[in-house]
Image 1 (cartoon, one colour):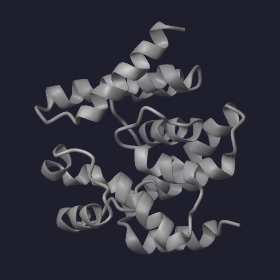
Image 2 (cartoon, rainbow, N blue to C red):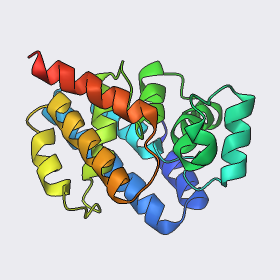
Image 3 (cartoon, one colour):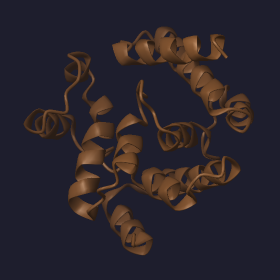
Image 4 (cartoon, one colour):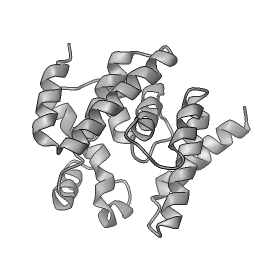
Amino acid sequence: MLDYAFMKEDLNQRMNSKLYVHSISTAQAAAELAAHYKFDEGKAYCAALLHDYAKGIENEDLLQVAWENDLLSNAVEKEMPQLLHAPVGAYLAQLHYNINDPEILQAISYHTLGGLDMSTLSKIVYLADKIEPGRRHPETRQLREISYKGLDEAMLYSLESTIINCIVQKTIIHPRSIIVYNHFFRMIQNK
C-alpha cells in the first residue's frame, strides 16, 4: 500500500513550494485523466506525484547518479543535465519509496522526453505534467482538450509543441524527442 501522506510530507520537505504545488496539481490532473480513460487512478496519482522527485537536484549530482546507474541515453544529456531528472527521479523513487511497479517507474522516467514503448500510464503522466492547471503556455488549453479526446493525438501535439518551442528558444533538441514524435506521427497517420 502506497503511503501518499508520507510521500507528500517528504516531497514538501525536499522541493521548493512552487515545484511541490506543481507535483500535487500534476497528480490530480493525472488521476482525472486516468478516470476518464478508465485506468488505475492510484497508479496515475502516484507516478505523477513523484514525477519531479529529482527536479531540484544539481546538474553535477544528476550526472553522477545517471553515470553510476547507467541512466545516460545520449550525449545531449551531458550538455543538458536537467533532462536527467526524469530517469534519475524514477531510480530514486524506487530507492526512497520502494516503488517497484515497472509501469510507475517508466511513467516517471518518460515524463520529459517520452518513449517508443509508452504505456497508457506513461502517456497520462506525460500529459498531466503539461496540462495541470498551473501551466499557462499558449498551447496548454488546446492540449487539455485533445488529452480528453485521445492520448496518442495529445502526445503528438505535445511533442510537436515541445520541438517548436526548442527551435524558437534556440536550444538543443534531444534526439529522442524527434524519434518519439515520428513514432506518434506514424501511429496517427496509420489509424
